[in-house]
Length: 255
Image 1 (cartoon, one colour):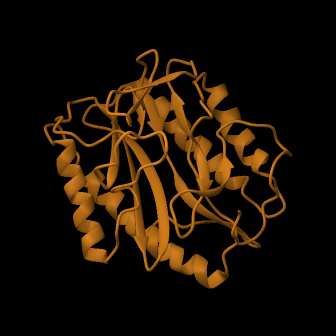
Image 2: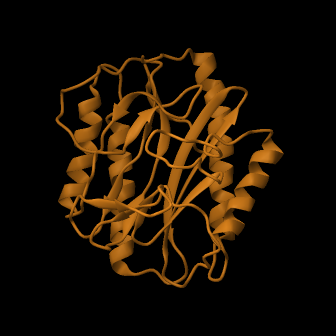
């Protein structure tokens, strides 16, 4: 069921979104060569604790997962696209890191993700990350009242395909509210003019993730969570929680 939020509820969600933004900013500031992924998870945990928020990631176990997720952030490195579990891996110069984070505050949730390079940036990684952010901007711009979900999907897909990147629609955007994953689904590729009509009060996560090799396939690690490109190429993942309003799209996971 698709739930529309009131202006007051959207403001409450904005408060949760700011905690997410603060967590991601702190993680990005701390990320450096030699830092362990588990250290980044601790940084995010401290931000959540200080804000009085909880994590919708920690203990989350959807049907596909063999075990509950053990951290408050996903840390996906290089060919990992989504759902990477923070381990004791130490970041290396030139790594491409995607960090996904959520926060629940006063019963409302925010969800966002960033991608960036550790140390020296490869030109190919910069292009991949920039394209993912361009797709995110295009998807947000399409999230206007009376448009369709397919308009968002088509906008994201057009940017990704123009860049020559792989796009998989098994995982993508989604509704956000009291829980992290609600209706509707927001695929990263689709046909304009199709799907649910966007109405003021709809809150969705828009989250492009692209595979540098140009193929759409992925594989899942033995941990049951970490998704990697099937061809070993690098991946980038970015995301914002966005409210559809009569005045236009409103990003809720920004400082």
